[in-house]
Length: 113
Length: 113
Length: 153
Length: 153
Ligand SMILES: Nc1ncnc2c1ncn2[C@@H]1O[C@H](COP(=O)(O)OP(=O)(O)O)[C@@H](O)[C@H]1O
Ligand SMILES: Nc1ncnc2c1ncn2[C@@H]1O[C@H](COP(=O)(O)OP(=O)(O)O)[C@@H](O)[C@H]1O
Image 1 (tube, rainbow over the protein chains, first blue to last red):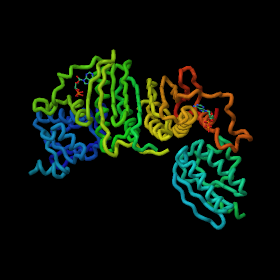
Image 2: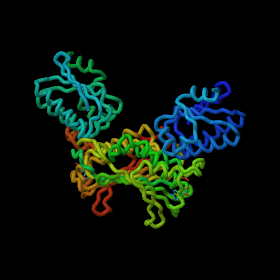
Image 3: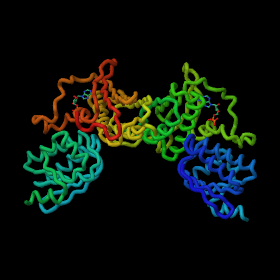
C-alpha cells in the first residue's frame, strides 16, 4: 500500500493505493488515519480509488479507524470506492456505517455544505 | 504460434511468432515449411524473431524440416534468433547444422550473393 | 481435446506458518484457476476467501508457530472444485461464530473472515476428522462456460 | 519477500496424463518460483526443463493413458530446491540415452529433452524405488543472486 496525504481547506485527504491486506497496509492505514487525528484534524476523507484489493483485516482497520475517530469527534468519509470494494461494504453492511462519495470533491463538499 | 509467409524475390520467408512447443506449434511449423517445399520453393528463410520459447520438440521439428528440405534440394536458413534460442542452438550444437543470420535481409542476401 | 470433460486435478501446497505466504497462495490460485475451470468473475472473490482461510490457519490455528504447517489442497472432481486449508490447531467452536453484520458487531474490527468466505463459495465445512489437524473446506460449483477447461493438444 | 530465509516449502500437483497440462505446470512454476528463491535468470530454463520432464512423463511414462497420473513435486529445503516429476510407467534404461550433440545424432528429430534438462539443473536423478512409479528428480541449488550456473555442467 502506498499513500499521499494532502489538505483541501480544512479537510485532510488521505489517498491510498495498492492492496490493503493483513500485515501489508492494514495497520499502516490505521496509523495514517490516527496521525491525522493526532494532528488535530477533524474532517478526513479517505480516497480508496487506487485500492485494488482489501481483505477482512483491511475492513477491520477501517472500522477501527472509524471508531477511534468518532471517540475523538473526528469525522471520516470514504471516496472513490471501486465496484469490488463497494460490494464488500454492502455485503458486510459497513455501507451503513460509512458515508461514501463518488469522488473526493463530493466528499470534501459534503463537509463544507 | 502464429505465422506470416511472404516472398522476397525467389526466397520464401516464413515469419513465426509465439511459442513453438510440443503439441502447440511444433508440427504446424514443420507443415508450414513442408508446404513451401511442396510448392517448389528452393530457398527458405525462417524468421524466428517473434518466437519467445521453443522446446526440444520445436528444435526437433526444425531439424526434421531441415532434413526434409535437404532431401528435396531445398535450402533453409534461420534469421533473427533471440538470445535464448541462440543459446539453445549452441547448447544442442544445432548451430553447426543451420546457417543463421542476424536479420531476414542478411539471410535473403546470403542466397542472392 | 476433451474440452467439455471435467478432468480430475489435484494441487497441494504446504508451507510453514507465516503470513508472508498468503501472497504465494494467491499467486498460485491465479495461475491455476483457469485450468481448474474457475470463471474469471469469481477469481478475485475466491482469492479473498483463500486469503482469509489461510490467514486464519496461520493466526488462529497455528498461532504463528513456524514449526507448524499450513496445507492447502485444491481438487477438481467433475463439476466441483474443493479447496481445503489445514492447520495444526485444535479448531474452534462454530457456535461461537457471530454475525458481523448484526448491529452489535458492526463496529467490531474483526470477525468478518469466515463470513466473507461464506458469501463467495458454494459451501463451507469444517473438518475435524484428521488427527492433529483442523481443516476448512470450501466448495465451488462450476457452472456454465467456466466449467469447461480450455486448452488443446 | 525475504528469500534469504531458507524456509521449507512443498508444492505438489497431480494431473491426468494429457499434454494440455504442460502449460499449467509452467504457469504454476512461474507463479511460485520467486517464493522458492529461484532467480529470474534461471526461470525460463527451468520452465523448459520442467516442460521436458512433464512431456516425457505423459508420452513415454504413461503413454498418454489419461487413467494414469503425472505428479509434480517441488520442495525447498535449505538452499536446495528439488523438483520431481512422477509417472506411472516402468522407467527406462539410462544406458540407452544417447548424446544428441554427437554427429550421428545431430539430425535426429528427438532425444534432446533429458539432455537439455541436464544443462539447466544442478543435478538429475531417476527414481525407481516407488512401486508403480517412475520419477525424474531435478535439483536446483540456490546460490547468491547472479551466481547461478547456467548452460553448463
Ligand atoms: N483455523 C482456525 N483455527 C482456530 N480458530 C479459528 C480458525 N479460523 C477461525 N477461527 C476462529 O473463528 C473466529 C472468526 O474468524 P473470522 O471470521 O475469520 O474472523 P477473525 O479472524 O477476524 O477473528 C476467529 O477469531 C477464531 O476464534
Ligand atoms: N518418464 C519416462 N518414462 C519412460 N521413458 C522415458 C521417460 N523419459 C524419457 N524416457 C526415454 O528416454 C528417451 C529420451 O528422452 P528425451 O531425451 O526427453 O528425448 P525424446 O523425448 O525426444 O525422445 C525417450 O525417448 C524415452 O525412451
